[in-house]
Length: 110
Picture 1 (cartoon, helix red, strand yellow):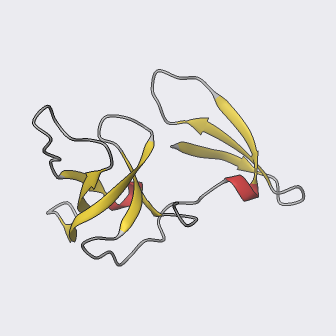
Picture 2 (cartoon, helix red, strand yellow):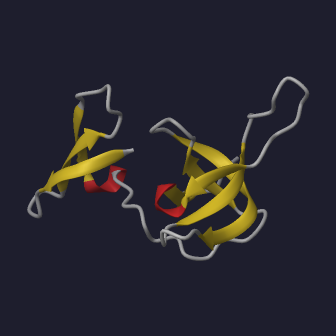
């Protein structure tokens, strides 16, 4: 997860800052390697997505457990099950993720 610092319309290059508060890293990436968030509106139970794992800035594969809903502050969140996230008893618990931290899988998973 990164924040756009600048984008050069001539070259298509983006300068990004890592959203991790403990990191001062910046990245220069071509437009083809940047996914702009915010375009996901409809999700259904069972949809495979990428979502930011709670308390991190990393995207992981997840399956929608419950469709998105709004909270009192106006933000929407979705309940997901992250892949390979079972506890010591083999149970995968639903986790809430803000919709602004969700993206559709950009390619077919094998």
